[in-house]
Amino acid sequence: MNHIFKKIWNKSLGRMVVVSENTRSAGKTDNTIGAVSISDTVTTDTMIYRGFGLQTLVLSIAMVTGSNVWAEVCDVNGSGGTGGSTAPSGAFACGINNTISSSSVASNAIGLGNFVSGAGYNSALGSNNTVSSEGAVSVGFLNSSVGPGSTAIGTATNALNPQHYRSLVDNIQNGVLVSVNDIAVTATGASRSTITHINGQAVSAAERDRFFINLEIGGNIAVGRFSSAVGVKNLTLGESSAAVGFNNNATKLNSSVFGTNSQAIADGATAIGNNSLANEANTVSVGRSGAEKRITNVAAASKGTDAVNLGQVQSLFSAIGVSDNYAHNRSPA
Image 1 (cartoon, rainbow, N blue to C red):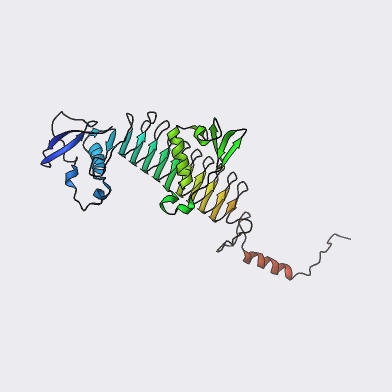
Image 2: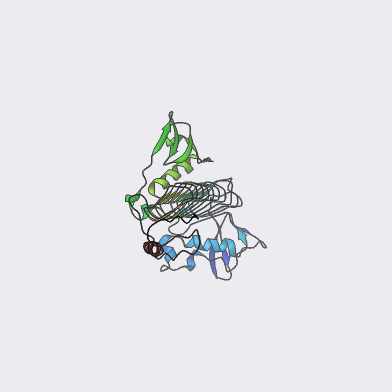
């Protein structure tokens, strides 16, 4: 935990500054520090950082990186700070109540209430984001990255409109919970409290609870390996899948969605626009049955696999129309 270790005199600033117990100088031992490490007292009441109580947080980052010292944890100790961040050796947590598990080497958590676990090299930036696997990134508010190398960026719908919460649907077979909203889970019983793995990734009780909170409130959820969920309320389950926009689902291998309220539920399928459904492998959909759309401004086809526009079709019909509409036998007598 981070505490004020001692106060020392800063020659450059001509004032006393506070130093963390975790801060170690890379140079000679002395009771002074360089001008880069700025005291909280330098800031003024009109600065935006004071409104959020984050002035010490921001300046502590400068202290870690600019004064040739290394501190594993920096907390907010100003007028609005409560501290409480924890991190293992080689990782960096800065802000209020951020947590990095002991296994997550070379990881970082910056902001408020972020939780990072997994094998390492993870990043969580913002508020209440969760990262549960190696090389994953979660940025914004209430996002979860579960799959290795996955990315979740954006915000939960809670920040905009609570009406867009997700309904959680449990799939119980033979008395054991096997999936929630089509997300595979491993559980020892029928309730979510018995879940030990999400999509094959081991999770602690805290990670599990955070994941389902983020899922229900409408955060971006990247479950598939190397998948990306960007925007608001997007879900990626397939490996190397992507969902960008609002309330989109990409559930299969290499599937992708770009738009709003759309789904790609087949391998290699792409859904574009609003309320589109791509449910056949390796296809592109701009609508769905009963909600078809036109594609406008399509150039004339020039190659065999190009899409043909209506003008070309009409020209073809016109050419057929001038014939006598009869088939002739041209074989020799």
